[in-house]
Length: 431
Ligand code: S3P
Image 1 (tube, rainbow, N blue to C red):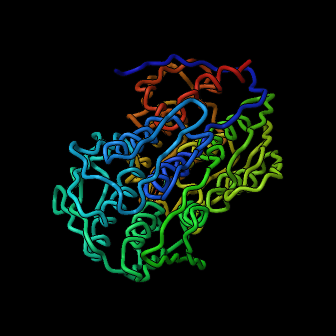
Image 2 (image 1 turned 120 degrees about the vertical axis):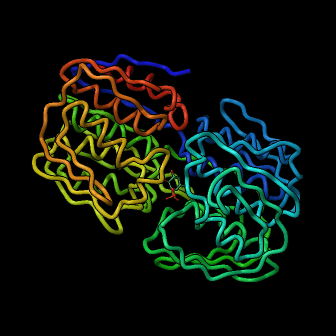
Image 3 (image 1 turned 60 degrees about the horizontal axis):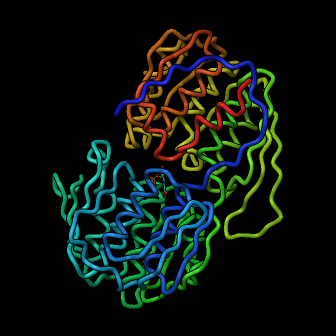
C-alpha cells in the first residue's frame, strides 16, 4: 500500500543516533554463514526488507536461520549442503541478494529460479550471468539471460580471470563466490575502479584466503568457510542522510554512532570535507574486520565541488543525498562518471533531477551524472515521490527539513528496504 507522509521544515536537528546495521555486510553475513561449516551469530543485523529477502531465500534452501531482535543465528550447511528449493526464490527489491546468490547457485548441482519485484525486473543481470556462464554454470533468464526471472542449474565450475567492464561489488562478489566452487582453480576479478571490499574482508573472517591488489581480487576453489560471529557496523549509506541533514539544517549538531568507515565506502566523508563541512570522526578502539567510528556533524557553510573517477564507487549509493547537499553549497557541483546511477533501484539520474526540480533546485541531468548550482532556497507545496526507491524517499524526507513550505512524500514505505526506523530517528532529532 502506498504510504503518504506530509513533512515540514524543522528548526534544528540535535542529539545522537545509533545507525542501523550495514546492508551489504548483513546480506553477506547470512549468505556466508549459510555456506560455512558451523553456527554463525550475527549482531546488529539490518532488519530491512532487503536483508530479510536474503534470509527467506536461504531458508528455502534448507538453512535454519533464527531471526530475533538482537541476534540472527545461521546454522551453516557447508558449501555443498544447500538443498534444491521447492519454491521460487523471491528477492523482492534486492539487487545484492539476486547477484550474490547467483554466484553461490552457479556451483550448486540443482535447479533454482529467482524472481523479484518490478524494479528488479528492469535491472541488468547479464553482467553476472555472462561471467558465471563462462565459468560453466547453466543460467538463463528473460531476454537471453539479461533480466529476471532467472533460472539456474549449477554444477562444476572452472576458474576464470575476469576483466569486469563495471566497478561493481555485486559482480565481483558473485564471481568470487562461484570461484570457491571450482576444484582448486584460481578465479580473479579485475575492475576499472576498486569497488567495496566487504566480500574479501568477510571471506577472510570465515577463514578463506583471498588475495587482493589495487583493482583485483583472487580466490582459489575448494576452500571451506568456518563459521564465525559477525558484528555488523552501522551503514554509512544510511548515516549519509543524517550527515547531510546535520550539515544543511540550521543550528544542528548530530552524533552518529558506530558507523562503518571502510575506506571503499567513505566517499561521502571525502565530499563533505571537500565542500567544507564541520565534521569530526572519532574512530572506535574496538578491532573488527571492518573499521568503525562515531561521526559528529554540525551546520556548515558549504561550497560546490567536482565528484568523479575513483571516488564514484565509494559513494555511488549516496549520490541522491549528495545532490541535495549540493543545492545548499555556493557554486557549481559537478557529478560525472556515474552512469551506474541509471541501473540502480530507479534510474537515479532521472529520479533525483525530477524530484529535486519539483522543489526548486537548480539541477540538470547529464549523460553520466548531474550538475547542481547553489545555493537555492528549496520550496514546498509540492507532491514528490520515492518512485519506490528507498534512497530517493529518504533524500526527499531530509529535503523537507529545509523547504519553506511542507511537502507530501508518496511511496514513503519503500524506506523500509534499508532503514526501517528512519522516521523515528528523524523525529527524535527534530526541534
Ligand atoms: C552493493 C554494491 C553496490 C551498491 C549496492 C550494494 C553490495 O552495487 O550500489 O547498494 O552490497 O555489493 P553495485 O555492485 O552494482 O555497484
